[in-house]
Length: 213
Image 1 (cartoon, rainbow, N blue to C red):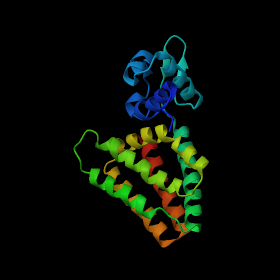
Image 2 (cartoon, rainbow, N blue to C red; image 1 turned 30 degrees about the horizontal axis):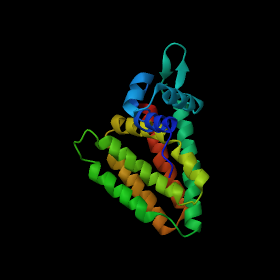
Image 3 (cartoon, rainbow, N blue to C red; image 1 turned 180 degrees about the vertical axis):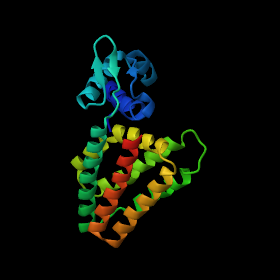
Image 4 (tube, rainbow, N blue to C red; image 1 turned 90 degrees about the vertical axis):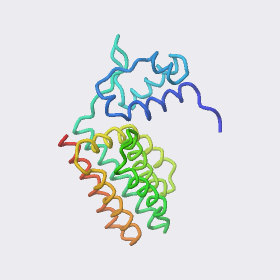
């Protein structure tokens, strides 16, 4: 595997480590600070920010730099709609191929359950990271590189809204785990319609939690 270029390093760092945090919303990103943290010059950071602007994750404001906009209710709704389309499709393909990733999803869920009552400051982020692993495992089981890359590209938005949901609803972590188990159980039963129903229910609860925030 070839080493990452400076632009690629900067892009992945800002997308996955900076923009994934709810605290980033409404802030301006300092190119020099980012360059120092990443260990690259300002040029690849600037290039990375322009890439992120093209994806709608930042807004380049003249004389002020890269601004991290808040996600509107409409954008959150569109994100959940897109996730639903991709996850239902992946589940259908996995079931029809007899290759539902139940073991991988169950492992991710077990890690989430271990984090539910943790007092660690990093626990919420780790919980959402495992949440991403849970859903990405389902997506990857469809055997489509394009589908997997498309879903992975939603990561920054998903992390940000996922963390927001954890902090705006009581016992949301417990409910997430229960909803994840329901999806796994439906996959285990081989019931395509039920899997779709459980995926939709999970995403709808998340959407309503965020819209009430």
